[in-house]
Length: 279
Image 1 (tube, rainbow, N blue to C red):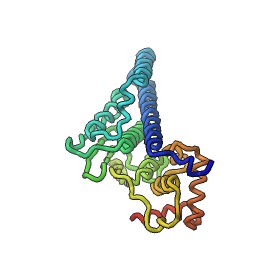
Image 2: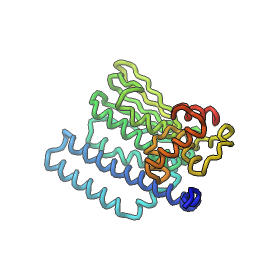
Image 3: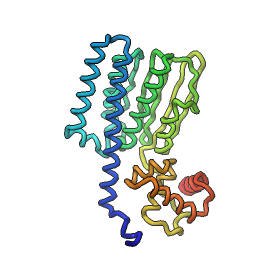
Image 4: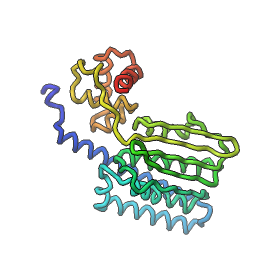
């Protein structure tokens, strides 16, 4: 069988993309359930019996949700920005209810542009991770979460009243930075000692441009073009494999071919070249 025979059809690629989105969505729901249970068990406001009862109810509810038809509907490609924010509030409800943080929500504009599914999932995960980091740090009493939309980007602002020692390179923000990079976004952290920290994130609502010009004459296969596009967003081989429903070794093989065909000496050099070409 030749290599061309292994290239999936457009319909198969759409099914693979939907499958990947379903996996991401299910992982997202599992994370919410586990975070909720942890928040309940950590709460100093509940005795052992009450915490156990609430944790069991939360776990049972999560299992029921995973088996209902609504799970399929939640994998929609587009989410209204207000609906996506409402789901964020629902996801954070157990953390707010049983934690010691005063979480304030600033609603996005009702006429804001709808969010692509991957942006909505990432935005919720980014905010949840930030709030959990603040809970674990234990030095913040108030957190303000705001979403806005300028037509091209989702704008996320998270502010706290903690010690004001957070920096962009801190390990606690690494998962956030990776998600932002994967979506070709921007992350900014501004801290004032004794007054708190502010995390500002910009997530583009449109995918990055396809590599062109310099790579037009390299005779790349359709799969290599897909890998190149994802590589340009900063994704690792494992993430590329997940997006394309292929093995990590296959993704690594395609990246090696791209390095060879482009004459790039390193992965970073290839990414830089692609970004310069599309910039």
